[in-house]
Amino acid sequence: MTVLQLVDTYWLYFLVGQYPNGPLGGLVLTLLLAALALALALPFGLLLGIARVSPYRAVRWPVSALVFVVRGTPLLMVVFWAYFFLPTVTGKKTDQFSTMLIALVVFDGAYLAEIVRAGIFGLGRGQMEAARSIGFSYAQAMRRVILPQALRHMLPSLVNQFVSTIKETSLGYIIGLTEVSFVASQINVQVFTMPAQVYAVLALTYFILCFGLSRFAFWLEARGRRRAAPGRAAARGIPT
Amino acid sequence: MSFDSSLLLAGPYHTMLVAGLVLTLQLTAATLVFALPLAIAVALLRLAPVAPLRWAGAGFVEAIRNVPLLAHMLFWYFGAPELLPEALKERLYAGNIEAISAVCALTLYTAAFMAEDVRSGIRAIPAVQMEAGRALGLGFLATMRLVILPQALRVTVPPLISQTLNLWKNTSIATVIGVAELMYQAAKVESATFRSVEAFAFATASYLSVSLAITAAAALYHRRFPVRTL
Image (cartoon, rainbow over all chains, first blue to last red):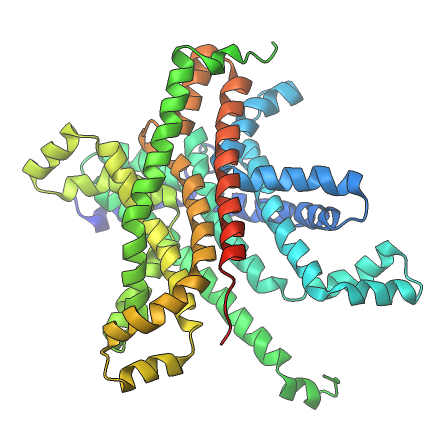
């Protein structure tokens, strides 16, 4: 059996798992999980980030502790906590997809919170003071002055975060979620004789996906820099 | 079910968990020993004056960084040994192949990230330093060793410490190929005793305290050796 025959036999299983005769799996499940996790982690991270710079200690301290704990432990630890404790909280068995999704949202949320916090700190205190002094409330100043500036350059780092999230979904393998790494090892068991080739194809798949996306982020960043160049801004009549 | 700390303080489960912690520390140390020189070599490749060498360096970094560590682990444990000649394979399987595969995967993965930090550290040193070194008659490697690297290291150590923190957390993934590190032992104790809270609390506290120590080391370094600007 050659690599080409291997791909020819198993490509559909690799892409979608047992779907439509069984649950969705494979590469499509990986992408779905990563996209959903990032979409949910964004508002969560934004909230945590704002709470991290809150003037109230009662808000700032517990959230800072959460962010610290999550960033100091491996993602796998968060997955294990979610796997064993979600059922005791909700009272029924949580499936692997929701477990992984919740672990990823908490984990990525903590990391995004730090990006948001750094963006807010990077602006300097003057912005908040100026906004407050012209009569905005704290919430208004946050929404209309601080966040639009702090989040403006986030798009490229969001694409990079998506790349990290795709890589993180591979941990679903450990709790038996049928994402692409799990499917690859299933294929490996069925074929039995070519483990190196099966896992090389898996690695190549991740590589094409993640490398393509990170090039896209690089392009976005370069475009952002060109647009922010003083020459262009002056041409559009924006004072610099 | 209340929190039973006696389980963690003595007895067979205590021994298992501590053995896991020790192995996790050993994995981190062994990986660092191999990854640091590899990272410096790759960074130098990426800055080499010859284009094919630069491409090789960039190829290494991109190929490794864009594949999840778990896929690296699976490849080095299940895949790579099959490609080796029979005699070597038998010797590998007789030894601790899980740990060797894990260190291989962790070394390559960590080195790819560290190489980028070393490279940006070197690039932070103005080009005239290289030109001055070359003008004095030093070769490319001699200038690197005597002029550029001593200055670049100061800028590079803080990001390298934060990569070490990532490495510390990444060792947990070695559990998928059956390395008996901390996460593996915690899961084993959990399934043997059904004391999930205790087992995972031990693992979480261990990960956190070493992470805290690494973060403190970074802060200390930053205070002792602030970056000098030219």
